[in-house]
Structures are given as C-alpha cells and as structure tokens.
View: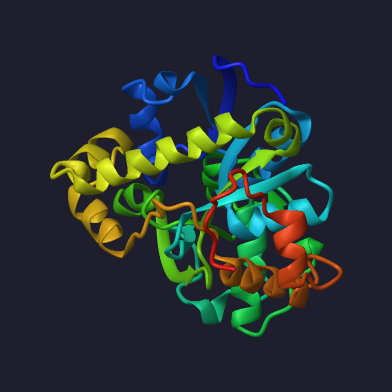
Length: 301
C-alpha cells in the first residue's frame, strides 16, 4: 500500500452547477490540506467522455451519472463507485430547435436524437424517454454530436431533431429562443455518483477516503452558506430564479452512503432496455461495482 501523503490526483466532471462544492473546495485549498493535489478537468461531453477517460487513465476520479457508470463498469470499466453524490433525480429537458415542427411528445416518434456519444447519459436517457412513451429506438435514431455545442449545431442544421440534457444547464438557450423544451424526463434514481479507478483505490485508499470526507465537508459548507444560490448563478451564467428552483429540489449527499437500492433500480432499467445483457443483483452491485474505501464506511445496504 502506498502511504505517501502528497499525491497528484485528477478528477473529471461536467462544467455544471452540481459540481460547485468540488470547485469551491479546490479553490480554497481544502484538498491540498489533506496532502492531495487535486486537478479538476471539465468534461462538456458528459458521462460517456468521462467513462472513456477513466478507462484510459486520463483521470483518476469522476463525478458522473449513475446509469452511465453502471453500464460502463458492466462493459469492463476498471472503476468502482465510492459514494452517491446527489441523492435527488436529474431532470432532463427534452429540447428541439426553436423552428422545429415538434411541439409535444406526440410528435417525437421516429425522430432522431442528438447524443454526446454512445452509452452516454443523453443516449441512455433517450431510451428511458422512449420506453416511457411506448416507442422503440434503433441505431438509426441517434446522431453523435460529442457535447452541447455539437447538439446546438445538429438541431440548427436539421441533422437531429431532439436533444436531452439537464434542463437548467440548457435553460439559457431556451430563454434566448435557440431551443424549445417540449418535455421533462427525470431519472427514477439518484443521479450522480463518485467513481474511482481501481488502481487508485488499491494504491491510495487513505487518500481517497480523505478526498471523499473533504468534498462532503465542502457540501455541508455550501449548504450552510446564505449566498450559495447567488454564487452558483454567477459562476455558471444562470438566472438566480432558475438556480433557486433547481436548488429547492436538490439533495446533495454529504455522508459516506451509497444508496444500493437506487443503483439497483438503474441497473434493472438498463437491463430491461437491453443496454446491458444480463441482470445485476444487489449482491453483485456490492461486490463488483461498489468500493468501501474505509473500514467504518456507511452504506444503505
């Protein structure tokens, strides 16, 4: 076991308001005080891009969508989940170009979805949304666009018809009239988890444990501060009223808990949709997908 105190770790996440506690903790040096030089990498491409980065070793840790990392671990990603990061669901907005002839979900069948990449959150949630409405999607229903900017171009040029993305991140584009949001699609499980490469867990268990405790303390500080909504709005270019609405429904997890029931719900949905090829039991989730990085680690098992 490697016990050196000053180590360099890299973490990836979407450049969105959910990750404000991480950015604040890095900014004030909370991780450095624990002997961890933590570098943050923005991943506008979302969960699919971060899964690739974890596989390649480009990052050590990622804050990513529950369903995305479960699907990728099932396909061989050498990482494990160490904590549920956001207990509340993620509300995906279903977007079309402002000039689109699509005005409601009744107009969506047989249309093309822009997705950041295969098995990304936008890809998986398109399946969830279609299944919810009784449609069947095939490969021909998807156009890979890499990120939000790519989706903007694809919808504008008519290469794709719809795009699912977190509704408050895209709200400025709705406000300016570039996008129209025709529907919402919340995830039926806790939306974000923290995943760590197995090699890092094996070599630096104490540092990973300290890192998790540190971000939990940052979450607690953010929750207790009066100016959090104002600060998030300013940092992410959002309207204060929109942030207040988002924040009212938000539940960051500032404990060492993993909600195994939520993971199980996501895994069951992925199996039912044919995204993963065999069911994943709760027992297997505990062993193959979840890492307890500390003897007194608490989990909802």
